[in-house]
Image 1 (cartoon, rainbow, N blue to C red):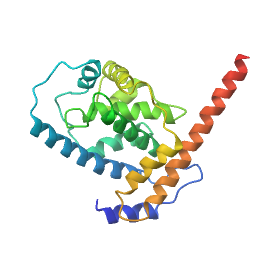
Image 2: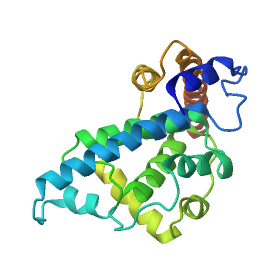
Image 3: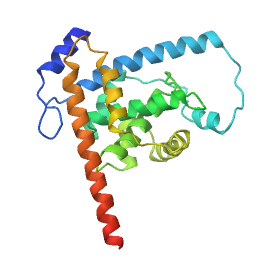
Image 4: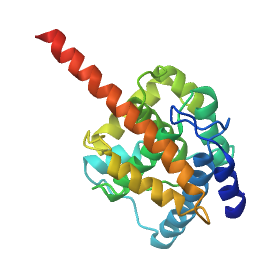
Length: 223
């Protein structure tokens, strides 16, 4: 999809009072898929240039290698991301939070980068963990595994590796969320991207308020 078409599409879609888009497939999926495809192509070129012999590395490196499956997706990246929206009701803001996690991994000790061999596992786990952070209710790991084409045991093991690689730092503040929204909006040619940010930001704020209310209620009940 061309950037002009995408921007027009975003601009035309209304945003509901609950912060969700009226589209059956969130536009953020198209934007994120396009961005990740370029990341993967660049990372693959870097790997081909380096041609480094594998080393044992530390614990972080070993955990990162758990995501290398040696196989590639048998569908487009956009189609794969759409599966989580269609079958697991993953909301648009989850994709933004998942992307922020991938960026943190890239900057971490293991320098985990999305490539063809780890895209399926890495994206499935990133979306799963982001969904648990953002959403009040989630499907079980076994269901997420089926949507992502993995076994339940495999996904649970990868989730643990992911959490250690993230050092269990999963919080995404509203300001950080806005930064990643703006980064994704730059994929759009002009100001229609504002509609995406407003929808996603409002939903995340509402989710944060709900989580805070739950924590306060639990604390009050414990007294």
